[in-house]
Amino acid sequence: MSSFNHHVIEEFRANAGQVGGPFEGSELILLTTTGARSGKPHTVPLGFAREGGGGELLVVASAAGADRHPAWYHNLLARPLVEVETGTQTYEAVAVPAQGTRRDELFARIVREEPGYGEYQAHTARVIPVVVLQRTHEAASGEGGIAGKLLDVHGWLRAQLALVRELAREEPQGEGAGAASLGLQLRQHCLAFCHALEFHHRSEDAALFPFLEQQHPHMRGFFRRVGSEHRVIARLQEELVRALDSPGAGFSERVGRMSRELEAHLDGEEAQLLPVLRALEA
Image 1 (cartoon, rainbow, N blue to C red):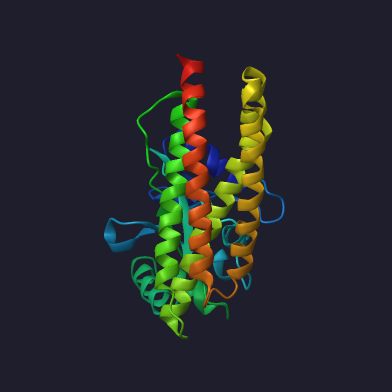
Image 2: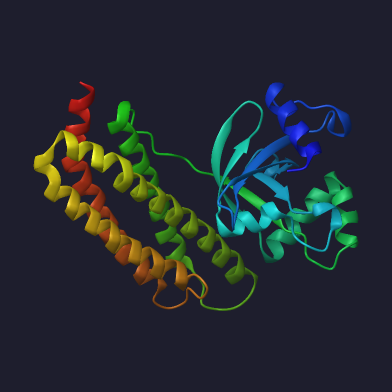
């Protein structure tokens, strides 16, 4: 991170999103991506627009008209789950680059409001991306403690998988802007779901399950069975991610198989774990 960006980020966080200097009077957000290679968080201050005036946030990967996309754009293509800070709230979003005519329409509207982006485009042969930050709506269980957290995570995973199923069913077979747009949207949401599921299962295997097994040795068989299910689901995830390069025929069926495996897994896990977790906090 440059020293300039570091200063802007510190000032942003210290003053509820307000900064001075060259950005005085401008609205900014902080976007945190995960390094495509390093796996480490990478935060940048960015200007933004709103889709439709009050909808989802849009950010432009202009890099001041450079001939290469900025690092944060490459990061979100590899790992679409990002964190957005507005100064008054922080939330998670799935980053989806707009494609085809939709990208062109959004970029034209942004240029009308901020002509500098048009000047950046004129200085480079690359098509400057416009990224839609689609806020994730976590399904809150209303329950506290570890049990509530487990239900919240499972609810989020179910909701994202339902969205992936819907997008997979809508995936067009032909070429063109519509196919490209939906294809990238499907890819980003599918990757976001897969990365979140992978992290959740790793956390269970490495921390939660060993702790619970110490407290309840009689559940050892259950934890071994769940660990085996995690490995089966991980293989299905890998198949899905590999298939993202060319979804086409058969992709929806892969998503359907993943759905059946995961729903059964989550239902079984909740049936066994929730009573134990609630008893720990009683």
